[in-house]
Length: 181
Image 1 (cartoon, rainbow, N blue to C red):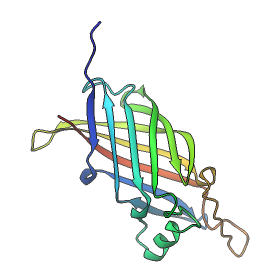
Image 2: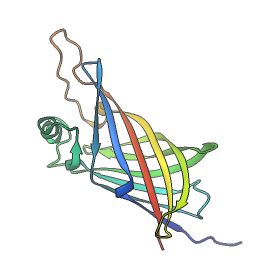
Image 3: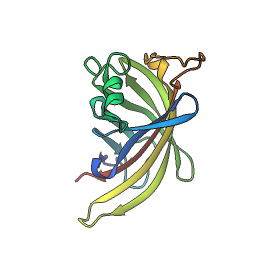
């Protein structure tokens, strides 16, 4: 029986982005991002990502919705409560090929002090060597989480009694990883 050496990959923050989308007044969508994050993956070889171990961390204070007042409110105790919960973390429990370049990524998401198992889609974008000879791989991660399940229960109402802020949060992350020597 041969044992394959683990291959380590690190998130390249310069060529990656983490965004979210939420309905506002049920009529439009607000997009935001987290500008500071880190993560890594461990695989058994360069070409097979089945069963990869993945972990990721977002610095919540880096939230950016292009509106300083809204960002300040999102960092407050009404929402993320950055003073008490400065990071959102993810630790994979399963990474399985579904079909072609599509994978299902399951793991424990911890946000606002609450940990829940979530499953998101991961689409493999390919691999390439950059101008410095480094091997890079890319994935686009998409999914939906319900903010209330993580204790983010702020819910202002409109004058007609409708929700001012949607409960489902769409997640979109375009992640480029660099193979570590």
